[in-house]
Amino acid sequence: MQKRILGNGLEVSAIGYGCMGLDFAYGSKLSAAESSALLRAAVDLGVTFFDTAEVYGPFTNEGLVGEALRPVRDQVVIATKFGFDIVDGVQRAGLNSRPEHIRAVADASLQRLGIERIDLFYQHRVDPDVPIEEVAGAVRDLIAAGKVKHFGLSEPGPETVRRAHAVQPVTAIQNEYSLWTRGVETNGIFAVCEELGIGLVPYSPLGRGFLTGAMTRDTAFGEGDFRSRLPRFTPEAMAKNQALVDLLKRIAEDKGATPAQIALAWILAQKPWIVPIPGTTKRHRLEENLGAAAVMLTPEDLAGIAGALAEIDIEGERYPAPLMQVVGR
View 1 (cartoon, rainbow, N blue to C red):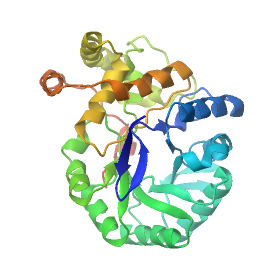
View 2 (view 1 turned 30 degrees about the vertical axis):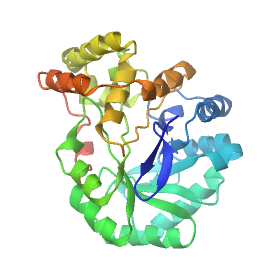
View 3 (view 1 turned 180 degrees about the vertical axis):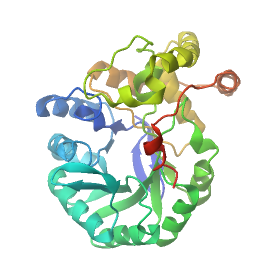
View 4 (view 1 turned 180 degrees about the horizontal axis):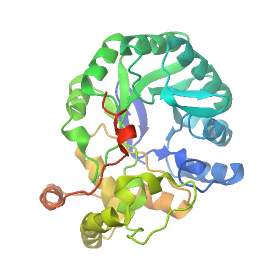
């Protein structure tokens, strides 16, 4: 697996692994043994970058990741996140990035993961009630104490990034980015990453599964699958957005690849400091996703994709209105 550098020297595999879906958000849950087998398979296949968060579960995902990766700790980079208000194991509606809370989350995450230092510690969402300078300062102190190595932000606005970076250098920004969610290209995030030398870690790079071509307007989501609440996953939206999948299928056929591999290869081709983190619960999908690193898109390919994308209007917001309010702050 090729390697890439995020920010100020964090080397990771060119494609990472998003752990959320192991037991959270999509309805199905893998057992500890199944999760461990899949994560260790990812390591064997060259993945060195694994992403989790305290809110996934809450708390249970970090436990799965820690148990699986502890025997290969020296081979992997583990990212986790703070910032939601979780009380007695229940996620509340609000955010909490008060410095004392950040310190408590770091200690709890270290214990659940069973590690001595968090490699990359993201603020999961920007808390409007806590100045970002205080957040960055709290993480700076955790870095000085040896509990955290790198600082990251998820779904910030560009000015928030600048303010945070002035206090503690930001290594990575984790935002949604894919062929159907391209806001980072125009909202200032690409520009601030380029200017300040910050890496971008796209989550949902396969459009929460839609860009794989495995869904249609007739797809039914099971109980607990949060896609059933997302505007882009109504039958009407999926029918209209099928044009993007059809484009991927045409390109994939020409390249001897799959739609998922083309979607990931396109992301990798955008900038050398981008590292997508697709997730899956299936070994064959893991292998498929990692195969994208070997798919080369020429300048002509990319120009053709750009021209085709310009003719496709994506139907539906990526989140319901309340959740859209907490991104890009």
